[in-house]
Amino acid sequence: MVGVDVLSEEATAFLLANIKPRLVLSGHTHAACERRSNDVVDVTVPTFSWRMRPDAGFAVIALRHASDGGVGAIDVNVCYLPNEHVVFARYFGCALLFLVGVAWWCATGPWPEHRGFYKTD
Image (cartoon, rainbow, N blue to C red):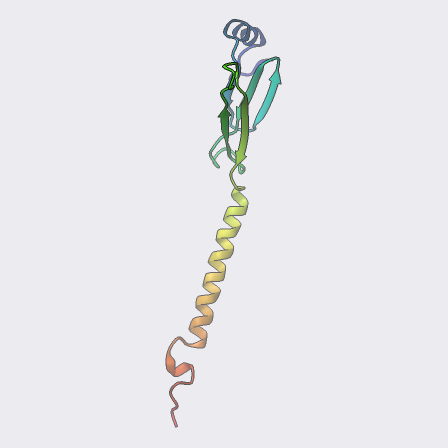
């Protein structure tokens, strides 16, 4: 069964045979994938939003021109953002450390008389 968001195998074969692309890019909400067949590089780029998944990403593509005037190279790198859960855990840890620091500062006394500068003899 073909999904509603993909082309059928026949349509894909027709487009590849008639257009003869070197690079095919598509986006997906769940995963990244790279396939190479014949001279075609097929790259599926993951979503750039944490709304869809905790490890969002993007693609960096380098197209190199061949010095002899021929076909250059295609380099595709999928880069991932930090995991959403790790980022929120770091935010929570920093906030907790800040609150502990403020509580300690208030408990030990931020004022000079609490630090022994003034004697009340």
